[in-house]
Each structure stands twice: as C-alpha cells, then as structure tokens.
Image (cartoon, rainbow, N blue to C red; front, side, top):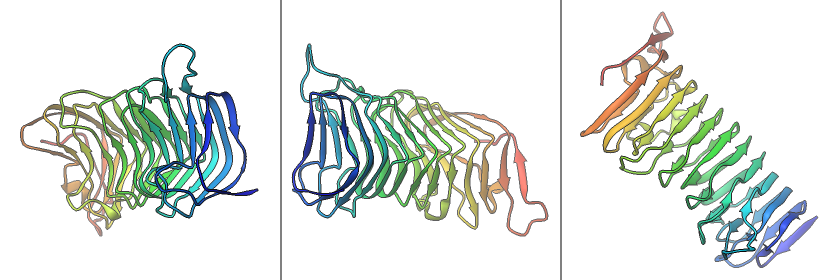
Length: 308
C-alpha cells in the first residue's frame, strides 16, 4: 500500500493502537510531523516505510500534551521494521518531545533505520524520557544518531556518516551502548557539561572506524564526571589516525578502559586518554591492546596502564 500524506496523521488518547504496514510519502508542511502520537500507550508501528519528499519537523513525534488524572501515560511504544528515507528533509526522525516532562518513556525499536535527517535520528527530551531500547537499528547521514536527555540502550546495528554517533544533552540515568558499529563519524560520543554531575555510560564492544575522525583527534568527548566505561571493542584501524578519549570537563572525571583494542598504526605510542588542564583524572586501566607501527615485526603491544 502506498499513501500520499499531506498533513499529520495523529493518534491521540489511545490505550493500544497501530499504524499499519505500507509506504507513506510525505508532501505536507515543513513545520509539522508526519505522525503524532499523543497521550497514548503501547502503539505498535511495524513494516512501515516513510519517504520524505518535503521537509517536516519530525517523522514520528511522541509527546504528552496534557497531564492529570485519567491521562493515558505515554509509554511502551514499539517500532519494528520501520525505515525512514528522509532525503535531508526531516529535522528529526523520532522525536520524544518534553512538552510535559512526564512518562514519555520505554520505547522500543527493532531493525529500524533512519537515512538522511538534518538533525538527530532519535531525540529523547526530558528526564522522564528514559529506558528506551534499540536493537539492530541504523542511523545514517544525520547530524546525530541519538541526542538524549536521559537513558537508553542501543544494542547492535550501526551509526554511519554522522557528526556525532551519540550525544548526551543532559546528565541523566545510565546509558549502555553495546556491539554497535560506528563508521564515517567525527565522534563516537559527546556528553553534557562541563559539570561535576555523574552519569554511568558504558561502551561495550563498540567498533569505531576513525577514517572521518574529528580534526582534534577526540573520538569521545567526556564533559561530565563519569563514570565512562570503555569495555572491549576496537577504536581505529590501520592507516587511520589514533582516536582518543578526551577528559574535557571540570574537577574529577572517572574512566575505565579495559579489554579494548586501539587498532590504528602506531597506537602504542599514543595514550588513549587526553586530559584538559584543571581536570583531575581518575582512570582505571585494564589490559588493552595497541597496534604497532606498520611494518613492525610484531603487530601488537599489550599494556596495563599509562601515565597521565
């Protein structure tokens, strides 16, 4: 089924509901979303393609527009096999807007893709937009893969050709990013700050190709207190520049780096953590592996700690 959409498709005040499969072609105003899910719970969206032929504020907007007794909480929406072809038209892909910062949470995405978005593929606004789960999803050719005020988990999939793969815009609840490939992005992660507030952020088994690394060499820009845990994974490879973790906040900043591979040629000569003046680094090192220079008789160097 193919449907031309010239104004917002709105789901409002529903406890359960569905956006059916099909191909939706957006030809509406630039200031409104394609779909708006308001004051609703457990909406299911699956087997949907959205093609933007015009600009829009977002493809999916999820929000609370009213509060009080009897209002259905905005929670537990599910998106499965949804593809957004933005053609650089939408400002946002999925926008959880904090019009009222209450219960706009627990979204789930399975095998969903966002291509060509001027802003972020996913935006989670507000401290009550938390504990979202993305599995085997993809963001490509967007400014950011995710911008989040609070917590999410992204497992598997890929973020490609974005300025930042992940941007934490407030210090919120725990964030877990596991098994995600990050390609052709300037940075993997940027956190809120500078601030002495703490937030647990875990990068587990992440693969970062550093061919489009930011000119300053910082793949991760940590601007809050941490703890940031970099566990396993590979950062850089071959003739790519050596990506670093920058401690760019204030006061004490905490990082764990363990079991990771820094795979760019000559990585054994560069400490993977860079510290801004005035920062008190608290770095817990584990055994990590560093690629030696091209042509060295031994490929890798194993090291337990670095001096900062």
